Image 1 (cartoon, rainbow, N blue to C red):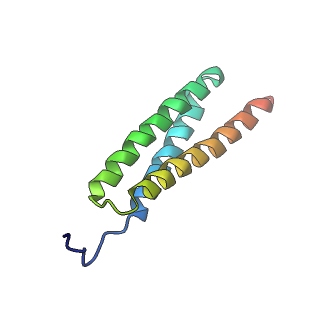
Image 2: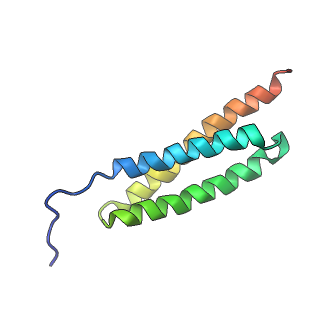
Length: 96
């Protein structure tokens, strides 16, 4: 039998932290990577966000809703990186 937590820690901060890391990684990739190498680097960064998400969610030490928290972290990171990547893709179409 397990003892319920009296005041469980909030887990939304860990999810948002992964989103922020994804946004920073996408901006850095968009600024420093050549246009033809952005897609492979975004894939690598998303893999890093997956590993970071596992680390953050395991650090909470709660098994309740682990799968939902992981899905929210990774899906949010994918959306954030996709929107920023879409913006950089549109920027490459505009002649400088």
